[in-house]
Image (cartoon, rainbow, N blue to C red; front, side, top):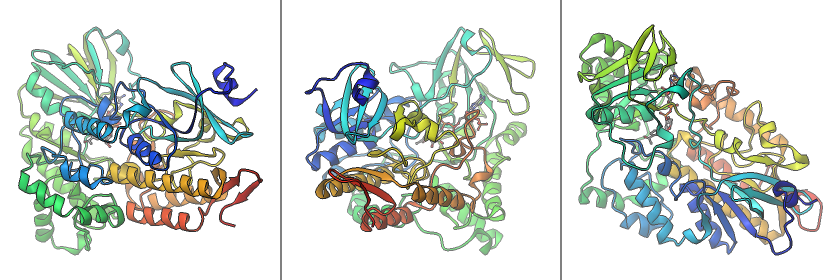
Length: 556
Ligand code: N01
């Protein structure tokens, strides 16, 4: 029985659908992948679970959702016409505008004809005799493809926590990562928000303006920097556009996180108290994620980190009038930046409103959710609606939902049971011709995602082009290279303060998930150089199989 038959249960007669490449997901990664592969003249089918393109920006449509990297930078760079013509309205565009941009890209580059919406990829099996994948989709079809590219997103598998009584709650329950398409009006309603990560921090001030009462259930206080969002003027857009060649080059090649900003050349302890405070003040007034790049050792040295953390804690105390609430909002169990730092608009000030209450569920965990209340510390907080801003099974969650089997029938879930293993975050040994975009082991979520997406897509496209020109049928990471890379990723992470936090970077938010630091922290510039060198050496660390011959190492 062929793999096609075995996974679909159907007999796929000759003439059944076959593509050069199947791409899973039509977010920013999947769309650009399609565009590039078309450039190689390949047949491509993109499957997208959602009802439209946009990925994370299709699903995360909660009130207040917007990007936290400036839009002039959180945008594609591959088309100069596109970046010169698209008008971002604000410094940080709101979700509907980013989704409009995704749709514009789909239309502008004529992508829709190769994208099948409302279709999940359920299974993919590698057929060793054919060196190709058979892919089964939720509409009951099975197709074959030489290559599969997982463009499934790092934060796509929304996680609903297992809280006693949640299913018996009589009001409405919303998850930020699965927000309804219709407008939700909280006017006059008592709303409970569980979760104070980036999503919770963005939506609290917006819902506070509508709700009759908002109760925020906080387990971990987070560091957040004001966004200082504002409308962009035409002059600002023009100034940016004029500098695009340098901005994009810097973001790709020099920045650690794919964002154009000053590179710090001093550590926090190299400055005296006054000078340091002045620098933090300046960054706080400027707003945004680049607060963390004021010094070069905030992620490395706890004493340096403490100076920034203390500054932000002081700011929280200045903003929040009630000292007890301010104290609860001051993060105290992780170094600043070791959990994804948040960017907000009036988050802390929202707690000065008479209709907002903060409840500490670290000291008193939620006991249960009743028909109309959240019970904690023996007290019932009455709510009509609950918002779960409880995050995602990050980086591996959306991959794990697909039943992927590689050589010898081994599944990716089996292989990754003790934590994800990849070479360069791009491929996993034993799974030939299966590429992952911004997978674990690459800078990914520690960077401006679009910069990392474009780099992976370009690399994968070049790689497939190389294989076709030389008649290679299959490509696979070799185990030794993979083991070295996994060790390197781990080693670099442990030179920083990041592993000190219970973060989703570590898988710590998912009960039972192996705790391994998943993204590569070495920086996008360094990482790009490594990937380029690997390619220049004939894809060193990967084995390639020619059509008519046995396996041979590309690098030998
Ligand atoms: O999710 P999170 P998120 N009981 O995992 C709490 C990106 N993003 O959706 O920290 C009670 O950060 C949990 O508490 P704790 C960005 O990369 C970007 O907010 O585990 N509480 C935490 O407070 C971000 O990092 C933007 O103690 C529970 C919260 O829920 C990533 O997405 C906007 C709980 C989850 O925070 C994820 O952010 C939004 C339980 N059982 C998101 N389970 C931009 O601005 C979880 N929590 C671009």
